[in-house]
Image 1: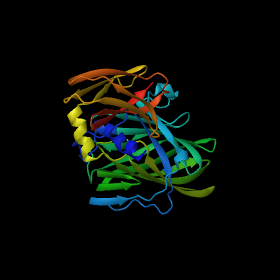
Image 2 (image 1 turned 120 degrees about the vertical axis):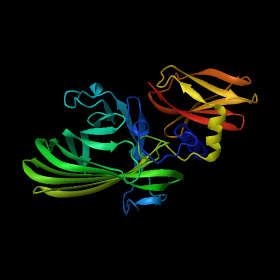
Image 3 (image 1 turned 60 degrees about the vertical axis):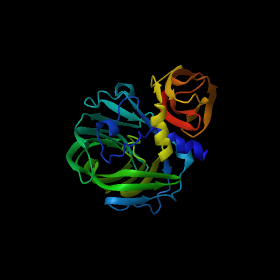
Length: 342
C-alpha cells in the first residue's frame, strides 16, 4: 500500500517543476479539477514559522480516515446558485449546500463566497465586493488586500456584513506530513475580519493557513483553519486541520521515469475508455494499474507493447465516477497520471 501511495503523486508533479510561485495555471480551479481531503487532529497544531528555508513538521499528526470529503470544480449553473453568484465562473463543490464560488484570470483569483462552517454553524456568505484570493504571480512576501461586503445567512436569519481581507505568502520551505515530504512548498495565510448584523451585531474572524506544492496540486497539501465568532448570542472558537488525501511525495526516480516514458492519458475527463501513450525504448514488458483515491487497486492488466512509441486503450467499464490514478509499468520504470472518470 505504501508503495502505491508513493507512486500516486507522480501524476501530480511534473519533473523539475519546483517553482514556489502560484499562478493561474497551478492554483486557480477550473471545471473538471478535483481533489479530496481528510480531517486531522488539530489539538496543539500551530502554523509554524515564516520566511524562506522553513520546515513545517506535521509528520505525527493523526489523520481521521472516516472524514474523507471529495471536492469537484463544476459549473456554477450546476449548483443552482447562478443567480446568486453571477460573476463567478466556477464552483468548488463537496455536495449539496457545500459550494464555494470563484473566477480567475492571469492576474487575479476572486472569491465570491458560498457555504462555510463556523464551528458547527452553517453560514452562507455572498460577497458583493469579492475577496482577492490571490494576485498572480504570487511568491513569498506578496500580499493582496480587499475591502469586502455582502450578505450573510446563518441561524435561519439573513443580514449583511462588511470587512477586510488580507492574503499573504508568508514562507517557503519543506512540508513534512505522515509518510509524506514535500519540498518547495509555499505557505499562504488568509485573514478575514468581518462585522455582521443578523438580528444583533457581531464579528467573525477567519484565519486559514494553506501549504501549497505548486507543481503538485492546485489544492493545498495541508490546511489549518481557525474561526472566532463573537456576538451577544455567544462566542465560538474552532480550529480544523485538513490534509490533501490524494498526494504524496514523488521521489527522484519517479521524476526521471516520467520523462523517459513520456506517459500521457487522454481524453481526460474520460467515460468508457481512456487512451495511454508512452515510449518503450527497450521493448520491455508493460502493464498498467488503475488506483482509486483510497490507494486501492481496482484494475490491472499486462499489455502487448512494441519497441518505441505505443498507444493503447484501457476500458473504464465498471468504475464509478470520480478521480483515479493510472500507473504504467514499463520494465523497471513506472509513471502515474491522474484521470477523472465521468
